[in-house]
Image (cartoon, rainbow, N blue to C red; front, side, top):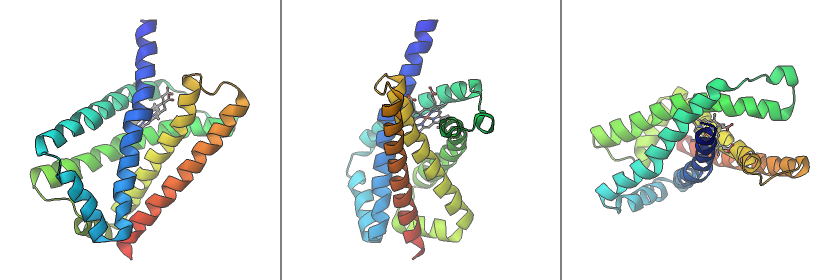
Length: 207
Ligand code: HEM
């Protein structure tokens, strides 16, 4: 029983950092093409369409769907066991620990909405290709959705970058308090940069 929990925790940690981290970077990179306007984003999206459909779906299911489902389901189990007490202890790391859990809950709802609406309903069921024009109309006509999307991206970015520090602790990469705080500062700098890029590409739909 102890061994199963140990290996499941390690797998959860690896999947979060490597598989989902890669998906997050790819997502931010592709979406940041919107800064260059319709031609740049539609060009990047068209590149992905070059992959034969069955292979594309197989990649989506095995490289995104399965890792995300495992990480989310086991993550909910971990989060339900966590005791968040940031105001009691008041340390920055305690707040970060609590935020890791709160962003996880937001991500459960946000990712369900995002994947079901854009990927399954719009692209899958109605067969409408995702394009710059579609996203621009969607965001500019629903400002509340834009805010929820920005918050969803911020939640994913914080959850991932804070996860880099906890990953280094879990795996014994960062052993002493000094090296842990250096990794923490670097991770939070990455968090700030990725959040800024997100604000810029989301804002570009409104200019
Ligand atoms: C879909 C909802 C999600 C839930 C419920 C969730 C839940 C969790 C929880 C509870 C932890 C802390 C684990 C621990 O303390 O041992 C965690 C860690 C982590 N998560 Fe997530 N997560 C979700 C989505 C994501 C996404 C989208 C990413 C990547 C973009 C991600 C990346 C990570 C990373 C890198 C860690 C750190 C692993 C470690 O500490 O070793 N998670 N997640």
